[in-house]
Image (cartoon, rainbow, N blue to C red; front, top):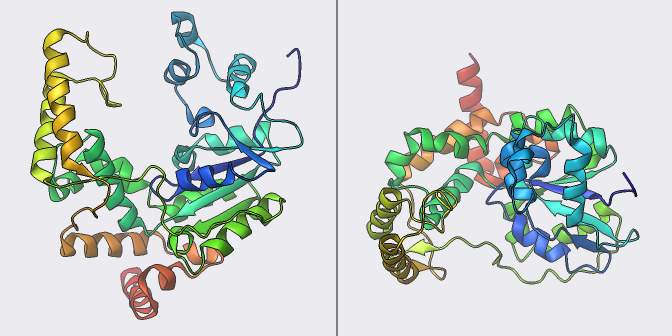
Length: 334
């Protein structure tokens, strides 16, 4: 290395659809903090380096596909540091890659290179988070299934895992000390009664003055749009799948963009633009499905409250429901 690399001082490690984009945007307004050029570099969670380098290096040359994390780490770090090279040393540098929380290797890699890094995690009631994730996939053209069918297919495996907070955080806390992890509950972050207190707590955790105005009570960054006609959007996604249309994360650049696909894509994009609304709430999932999801997550996240020092059952589900969940868990244990 010709000179010391500028690397982040803190990370927002997740979880997806929990307000990480909004928090990153808010922190970037603090005079003592700057976030990375791209909100989600995802550098430390790219276990397949060829996939990672396609994103980091433009243009991509076939030689980069051969790079190995351990053997070529210095080369890769030099590229990663470009996200922070314009940030002065007396300003905190941060980045937000929600995929970190589910990565098996990101904690070790960060700990090895940046042992003093501060970590921020945002947690949303997991069934609620899964619903938001589903509607985001509908909006992006990444699923053609209705909620019931989506839930029972392989497409739900990864989104379901995002809500296993207890398991995921135990892995991080086996590598990082607890005092380096700051937990934010999404419900408190978006509430007008507690939002300012939550943001001030983040500033104190990072060691900067709590000067941010967080009185805005609605998160608008990376907001998920809701289709006016759900069936129409799923039908448009089927067309995207059939013709592998560009403009989505699934098919970008995989096929030549010919005249026919250009016309079909223009029609699909126009209809989707009319159909997707950012002013209305997405339709609710079936109540019985939501109840099964909540029971599943309450059982799988047993011990989360003790792990983070907050009574998440009471905050997410209310006191009476939380006590009922504890009774259910004790019966299952027997």
